[in-house]
Image (tube, rainbow, N blue to C red; front, side, top):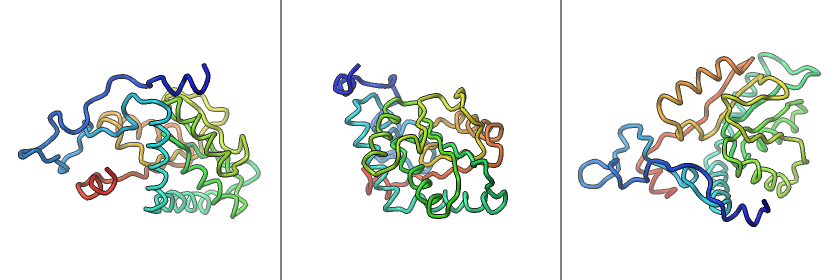
Length: 210
């Protein structure tokens, strides 16, 4: 199927509704005092590639504005300091990679320090790998520098086992039980360690980024 045809295909299954279907407190206000999976985002819903791309690119901008990469590279700095990186590259796997902005940031950070990292982005949505490769070309990242894999992280077969598993703004998309399952998976999948970088939903954030 051509890229143009794919733009017209809606991806994903039916999902819980956006705010407006039972997640509000009295008075019609969204209740931010509890974690609520039904507070959905555009990226969670069936959409075209164009819609997905717009949402993912906006998310990348938010990551830059809020310096979202900083805690991830600080964690990787501690990993490198503790374990060292020899001739065999440390394999860093980003789960729920979307457009891949986090791994491109990690790639730049590693290159500035001559750290031989192997980078793999995994996302269940096939739009993610397609967009990540486009963004690689736009940002001058060499083809193949980062491997983009479309798969369920729990079932993915990687060329090399993960040394470190990271995720950025991913776990808030999951139901509570899936978060627990994901953390258990990280414990078994990551040889060295894992890191979750995520947000806290709030009314102020909802107003800023709506």
